[in-house]
Image 1 (tube, rainbow, N blue to C red):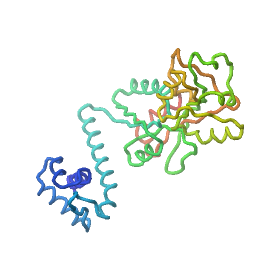
Image 2: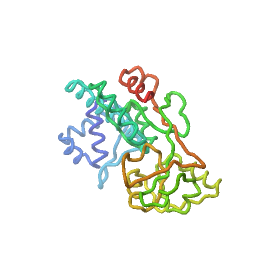
Image 3: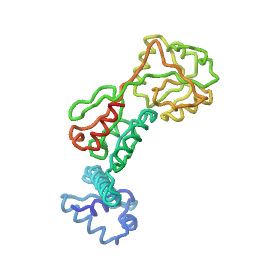
Amino acid sequence: MEMHQIRYFLAVCDHGSFTRAAQFSYVSQPSLTQAIKKLEEELGGELFTRERTGCLLTSLGRIVEPNFRRIYKEAAATKADAIRFTRLNNIPLRIGLMTTIGAQRLSPIFGHYQQEFPNIELELIVDNESALLQQLETDILDLVISAPLHLLGSPYESTMLYTEKYKVVFNNKHRFNHFSQIELKDIQSEPYLDRLNCELREGLRALCQNQEVNLYAAYRSNSEDWIVNLVRAGLGVALMPEYSLPANTDDVRYRYLSNPEISRKIYAIHFPQSQKKSEVKNLLTLLIHN
């Protein structure tokens, strides 16, 4: 099979007909039809059924579609890397960051890294842990920085980077400004801003039940920025990892949570062969020692 056949197949999937797929692909419909026919002959069955409403995938088509999408995506990424390298003489390094990993600690390290290795082009992809690990498995990413609840086994390697504590976050007019320390029980009388992407969310819920603490979620959001801005507006308090908070802000205050203290460990997740790449090895060295 050839890449243009896969591209035409995906175009029919996305546009629902051979006619629209041909227009989108800037090719004549007979050429597109012939390419897909040859692909069907190679795979041993029809990929589409034609109906009045358009083209529908057959059972065989549904089976091969995810793999064809992955193949096409990887080929496009490889071509883009090659073009960047040959034109700019840069080496791309793709890093996946779990959505709750804050930039405050890592940004200076990335800046230091690019000063030392100016020919490395950093690409930072922010997503949930599951999606990032899938991209790591397909070589779209070189490294994932995450806070896994449980360490991943083989074939992954997990390199410990740092530990960060959780803080109680509130605005500068809140009564917590007068507290020297804040316990979990103090929060239950406040509107609580629930971070939906927090990996410790279920553990916190169990902890609250054990301590007979009831947190009233006034707002829920999967965006760290929204949570911080709701705090700024005085709409509630939140529990956040310390490096997820913006630095040097007058309208957002915090105290480390006490009784109990809560913290999480941040890891760099990669495959053993990744460390053979000098660009990955050098970045890991900086991350570990900073």
